Length: 222
Length: 288
Image (tube, rainbow over all chains, first blue to last red; front, side, top):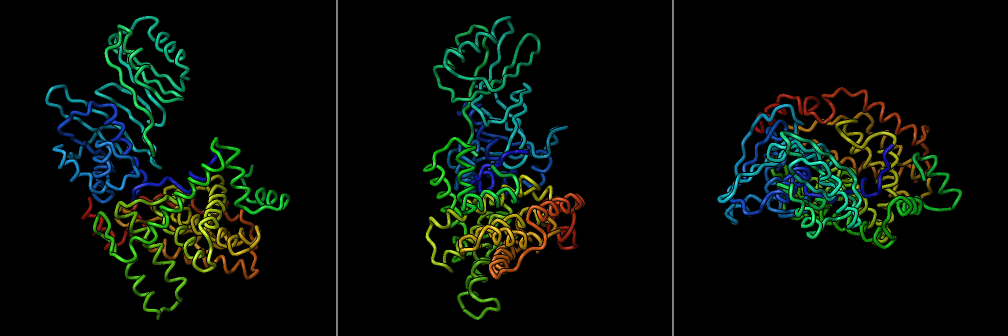
């Protein structure tokens, strides 16, 4: 039996109307923003399943936009997020699309840039404000944004995992989960940690010469 | 420390303590926050509740979908005129419950209590009892811990999710939590609190979750209004000395079994109940 804190019962403090269609959507948006470079000028949201069918009534559209603008799920500006995006010259587009065999509350968020390649994140809102990020730019991943998370892509070589874990351990960071997949000699690593990540650790890991891409996010509030 | 109500009763009786005291002790034991942090956090929960329960009373608040809204203000205006059937306490409690539900549907800030759909009941109950017995915020914070303890028992032994157990699991749980807290704040003992919580669950056992067009609006807001009335009535029944023949733990188990027996169409899918009426389906078409 799960143990419930008093704040699991009275909480979260959130913007309505629905923890999965609003609070969860805002969290996916914010995680995507943390992962992406923030110089985007346009964002396209591909909405799947229940998200596609009910996004207007539940305000899922506003919550997603609020998230990519960096707002938390309890931010009262969520309802004005689309106007705020307009004021900041960020073009917003919604497309209803079948994303395949995914959770009914799934969205693909595509960031458009003028001077760099477009970037996308796919995530699902699985209930109670909980979310799962499942794909980043075609790389299959699986993490929740509840923990400090490091994402790395590198040319596979024996010892890279151990070098990364040594850096973490030297910085007194405990690994909660680590997941590595590989395709054509390129490895994708998702590491969830128990304590917050700072710039210095990212710099240290970036110095490993096989690293192609590295990003990190700290937990996204509920 | 406790999973079931019978264990909570024993802890309260053996140590001569109130429900909220045991709930606070449990939280401090199981989490790593300090007593002051715990109180501050519950204070901020209460503040959010106060705002949501009052902000749709003097101005009409419409839902994001534009389907519903403005009823909290109607209810408050009607109450202010003074010529109501049920009297000021029940009517003003219903107005406050509608207010939080409308704030929720308008993308305002609320506390899920225990869910967003049932978020109107506990704030309205707490503010009603504050007025009635001239209580302080500190008292209400104690009441919120008591309510939360009852919610923990329901979540652990049954469910507080409409998709799993129907509306009885969401609004029923909120009413039971509120009823127990009201009794304790009104000076009742632990057994009376649990009788009140039992009454609240029994009164709406079997209530289905059938949101029109899948939106958390109709009939959700109405059930928050009747839910706070249910909590207040259940508290009075228990404070009058009436006892539930069936103990709270067994009522919770019964509620869970009833929820499991409900077909999926009556558990938040918007495929049954008032959502599946001629008008309900027409409204749904507008949003799909």
